[in-house]
Length: 107
Image 1 (cartoon, rainbow, N blue to C red):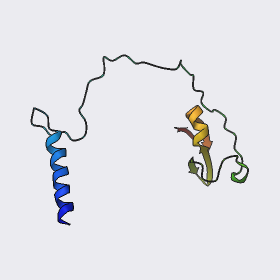
Image 2: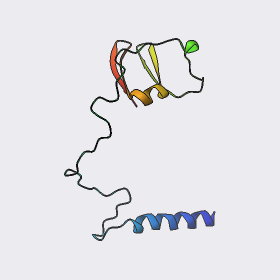
Image 3: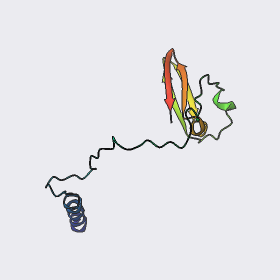
Image 4: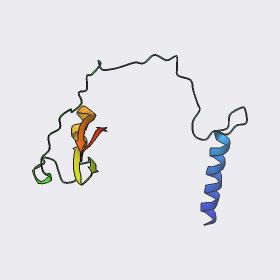
């Protein structure tokens, strides 16, 4: 217990005093920098990653993914849709309607 308390105090002191700026203000999270003059660099051309605009669904027992595959699940008004993370890696956004509610699912 005494060793844990000592370790906690040393770690806290390091965080508080190690992150202090010259102004005397302690900033243990991040510095606020102004990036407004930086150029925006893009690796892909505009619209290079297509959104899924009209998704098609199959029942869970017919889906061609493993039972433990990661998905994003959305439920509204008794209707549920699941979006495969593996599929979203290549599209990043699905425009859909679930239970009468228009949504955009992003990854």
